[in-house]
Length: 153
Length: 153
Length: 84
Length: 84
Image (tube, rainbow over all chains, first blue to last red; front, side, top):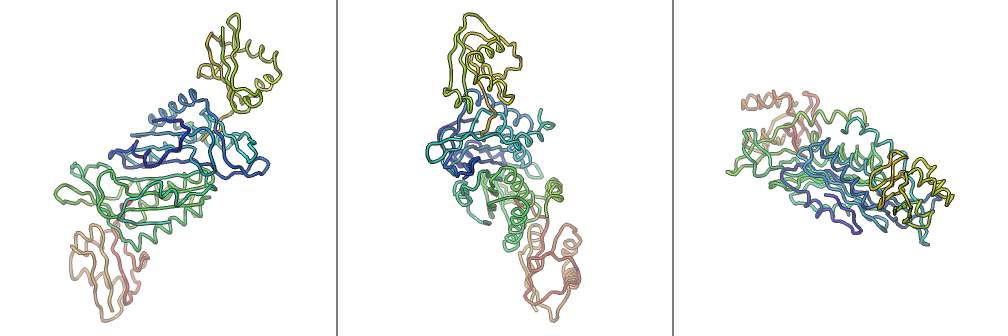
């Protein structure tokens, strides 16, 4: 299940979407809007998320497929918000469900690592006076993805 | 926050307990009752969780302390159910919250790995005729814990 | 033939538009389109020189500059992504 | 002096009780308690011979058999745990 949406989501509802008593382990990654500083040390008041939806859906499907192929998962759910988000709001949710925890945990980390560098979303910091600042990609995210190179088919 | 309880828990409520806009990343591990087979291949109808509560609380505090010491976490929540649980019911929840995802994800995995081998809970499989079967510790859980030996102080 | 250009992130901000519909009298390659755009507006020079920008033709990344564009194609300009 | 024994998991099931309160006229060591229990009931032989069983005195694991037990102490018998 993949969703790109303007609206927030509820963890219990999303858990129900992947629930089954064949699952014993669920790993969740939840990303939220952190009270961050701009490049010029100004406090942000929220973020704006731009998306090339048609492409992002294809890219998310591909990542989900890799997760399902490389780990023993019963379910893999990915939700990503777009548009304007306030501080503390939910941005992204990944849930992986498996019989055993090792698969669920590792696959969930893979999905969020891959999403960070390969899916057509762009973040902007928002400031009080309707000012925007483009958020730059972090080297860390590219480096973190390298760890999966030998694991993923 | 550590809780050992007879009652189920709600993911949104527990998220609120650790929410702050200094967090950008939350990692959850949720364990549930899997429709398992007994040692004699009989389908279980639920589980019973026994606990030495006074000791388990001390042990959980210790694990939580290690997580907070070894990773940059803002929060670490652990909830564990006790008593009789039906198929599909929630057993355990770990939430770690951090500014960045790497810390949250790794610490969450550490907590559940450590909990599995070092906290005074015991599982029993339940069958239709009030029969019980003791669940044995898995070698896998002890082996998985080894990976943290060089990481944790 | 018509080709839609879609701009994202700093490219959209810099060009002050999210898309363009451009017309050509004949089929052209990605490389020819690139040179055509650069000749019309110097901003494109910066975009095409930035090695971190990726180009997706009908949702597939372009890996050959000589790829031919067809009527109705959608070409997207993608700076490094920052979702999640 | 009184010592409380707490039994868990298969030990509780095997002994058919979750705890015992035992009385001694004088201080004893863990080792002496062990021998005393084994002499009263052969089931304890099995328990003490099982290397996977851990013994916690007042919530701390016993690492020395000669440890002295005191009045009011709580000694818990813990098979390998299986929570989570």
